[in-house]
Image (cartoon, rainbow, N blue to C red; front, side):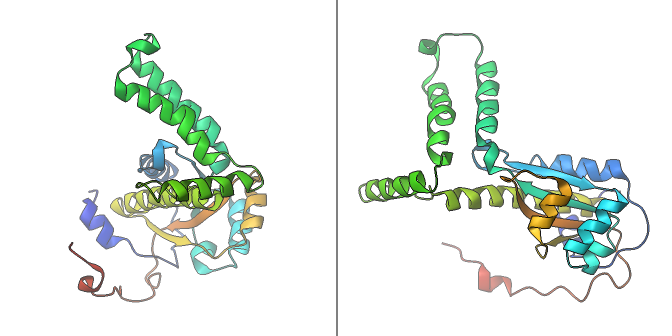
Length: 241
């Protein structure tokens, strides 16, 4: 029986050694469907998920993950990729979805909220994501900081800031995936230790793609969890304001 959310979170551990037992591809795929339902900044969905089951690719990826056990013994791998370079395409998709929902009516008949939403994707999103050799980002940063002297304003407008936004959204999706896997008794291990350039070559990713994390997948071996869970006391990180 599938675990509750709380049970799945408690069950999930970073498993570094897996059994040779195979996973059901379709079940893993459904967990990735759950990943795609994660919250994402401005609903831009600047992510892609590479579900690796091919043995040759698995071996190649394990090597560029430095042959760490979580990659070397994994039955499958999931590579979470950010695609900030697809912002135009994703913004357009949002616009088309919204216009379809609003129906066939003239611009004058749009509600205030509808006008704002359309302007958000047609004007604000390009302002935030458009970049040219770092110059536009620097100009935006200065402008927004000056406006911020007068009123509250969004300040993370440089190219590096928008990369962070994309990676935060991808990380939320990755967590959805790992909790979903735990719910059906499958195990995972998120890995940052890899030669990301070589990972991109193995997966034939374009220049604008970035590796967010690689997730080892399988069924935990008896020695797969390296020790008891340690967490800083909750009182040390919880602040009620």
